[in-house]
Length: 126
Image (tube, rainbow, N blue to C red; front, side, top):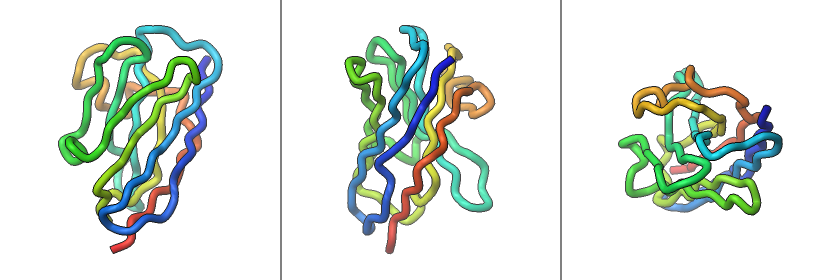
């Protein structure tokens, strides 16, 4: 079982930056992926980015490519989401979760994930 805790959310102006953290505790292993999702009011939870616990495999939603970067620090058991050039449409609660899914499509689906954190609010003002 893995426990995840997100932090780093806040209020930022359009064009600003934030770095979210997802601290993991419990059992982690190399084939595990950590994914970031977000959910805005009245909308479904959507995929943002994912990274394997080991190796360089990462993937992004088209809406954040070139603006967001996912990375990890294995020594700190933490995955980060660096968010630059933030826009009002990025406003949402951001969650991290784990998956053992392998195929690309599955790793972008919330149903493939478990061990969800409590979420951290990101608000981008216009």
